[in-house]
Length: 52
Image (cartoon, rainbow, N blue to C red):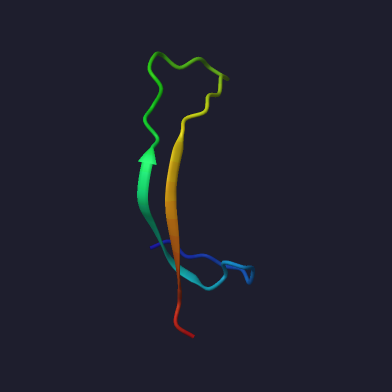
C-alpha cells in the first residue's frame, strides 16, 4: 500500500473503491503523438476513512 500525507479533505482516507464502472474502452486506431481524445467513462468512487 502506498502511503500518503496531508490534512486536507481526503487526509483520513485509507482506501478507495471504484464501483459500477462503465465505458472507458480505448478508441480505435493508432495514437498520434501529442493528440488527445475523450472517452466516455463513469464510475462510483467510495472513500473509506481510517478509524480514529
